[in-house]
Image (cartoon, rainbow, N blue to C red; front, side, top):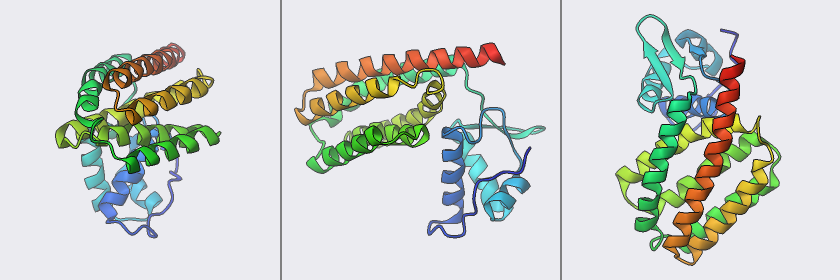
Length: 226
């Protein structure tokens, strides 16, 4: 594996294990550590300026999140995006998000609406697609947080993380989807402001279908060129 350029973590205030996990998670979600990358503990420790122990703990946690695979012989490897996983992730999101809306739309606070609007402002202003993908993930997670149901929220956050990998891939295929997605986000947020469960559900499901189509094309093109 080429020498990793991930940046040292000694300036971060969080615990080393939590910081390493989040740093590697972001690197995977944004494609800095693409599918198939071998994650050698000693090399990661050197790149991040930490000991091997938090690296080992972080890899174990990322494995439970479905982002890497641990093999007794190959070690840790970033999971390859697959068409079947993509379809499964979006099928599960389409099944669970309507429940999240039903339970959360009446509970969403004016502050959460303001925070969501601020995220959309940042998304519309940025030309950095990696930043856009991360802001998109934050926007959807914020709406899901309104449900105040721990298990549902955690499950949707995990699915949102997996979806981010595919959304990042899709930007290489359909960069113009950005403007369309931003319009859809605004409509979704307006439905939340009105506490309109039916409209919010319809808008989000249509939004997911559009995102799925773009991601599906990206994965198929990647597989064809492999």
